[in-house]
Image (cartoon, rainbow, N blue to C red):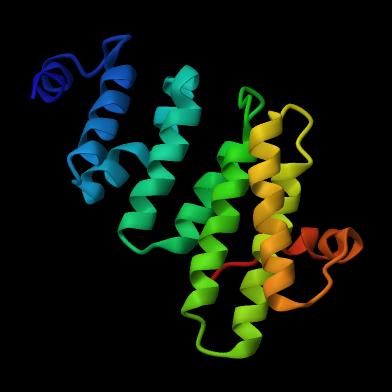
Length: 173
């Protein structure tokens, strides 16, 4: 591609990082997930192209999901959610909740299923309480919370979720 040619001929160019970012996103869009991960997974790229950090991390998370690397997808989404420039971390927390719901559907045991459902609720509650979230998004996430609580008939209070908060970064599927 032209991006590849540009990078080959101009590795030190000021726009090389942006070309790498766009190439990684392009690889993702054409379903070349390993190449997308190779490019977008480079932490130096986020330092060289900070304006694209959020897009890089979100695309990287989706590429990891497509390859079945749930733990790396989770880490990329957590990094995206924690970016100061992220105007909508609720999106990342909502996606984390969705990941855990999918994991709960194929959990090998009832204990694992319950643990995944609790993590989904934790992330969805975090998303729903984000101060800048728009009302329709908040309502949609709240509906997911309510449906899961009804489905499990298990009361999950915010205090229980807060107890689990310290496990967020260390819990992986």
